[in-house]
Image (cartoon, rainbow, N blue to C red):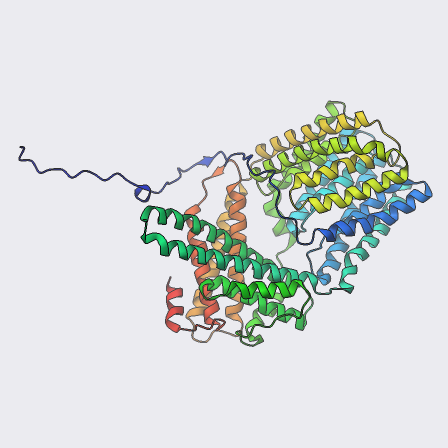
Length: 596
């Protein structure tokens, strides 16, 4: 036997012993181009029927009047105003009135530029260039103002199609007048539901926040259960905890975003007792985020159900008086970020849109397609927050258009029976598009594509075979060229925006922590600091998700993002406890939360 000291066998490293992966400095090419799940259908929007019915009410009367007058060739101008009824259905009516007015003016402004260009030149190269610049401006403005669906796509469709309609200068005022008149009608359609449910949008936003908070509470309970059951099997318990932790993190982020959206909705609503009652419920959703273990999710869902059922606004009995909501009034007094500052980070997206639309339109012209604006609009519809999402939208657009062309081939014999049948088929497709598009973009495109093809027949009957061929070519050209432009125009500001968002969260967290350390902070200061920190955390998550899907940029500070989010949410919980909004007001617990 050897006298040497026996060596103990070295344990094999398990998953917990692996050193953390540290990304190498430099630029990463991108996160990949996924295909799985891109075409998966989701749940329909809670209010899918509102834009669907509104667009029918806004489009049908003008089209039927034009049909009776034998002037369906003017439908492109009336639809410019009528399609404004698709917007702002999630906003309180006070804010909706302003937003819809701006949408009508923006739609009419884009139409006016297009008609002036069409009357001054017949050069398709110039017209495509004008259309690309208009598309870029519409994309940037819609994103900067957070207009919401259908965002810039409808605006770009109308302005781009109008560029290629024969026009003279003396006709322009009359056509703009038609758009303004039908835009006014669309404004009335959008505001009409206020007569029946004047607080409907605020109640829905608050109900969504309560349901999202209840889902977070359930996810937290599931995670706690997985941790408790880890003793029986250490390896299995660890994997289960990891999966539950990811689920809880996603649920918390979704709930935080829903609460933030509810606050933004309430801040734009009219003041009054109803809004005050809804504010108390949103505060209760914030409490659920801060202390999920002390929250009954069934109670949150009951409140949400009452709000959606038009019952009286519930009043929680475990909240203090309205003094806790003084931070809402303080936030109302703070001015919004100037538009130019919101536009600056969007410069790369606007450049992508301009380049992609111009190249797609010119490529379509080079192939001899008679309607290059179809390729232009296809490219404009692709651009999302990052390259990965743009890729997903490109796949959805191509699939939806291909199926939509088949639907057009099936519907065109019916539409050719009479002009009345043509109008009715287009109305049905309008309804179908809005009913389906919230489930997945490609499904809505199945209705949008044949509708766009049939609209070209309002002026005169077209050859279906040629329409189908040109649409297929333009779809493929717009998707391929548009996506190539998204890769070519790098968004190097994504990393800078993430750094700025991290700094904003860290500063907001430090400010809230300083207020918590004070024995008697100013009235409303803690509430305002809590909301500022919550807003910063929501913005950080959105910017981090967008940056993660961007190509050709430096490695992202993922660990710093996780740390900032965890610290920020702990401080949010401490601010809720400090304000006395929880039944458990133990001072030692509060101090421990701040120290963490």
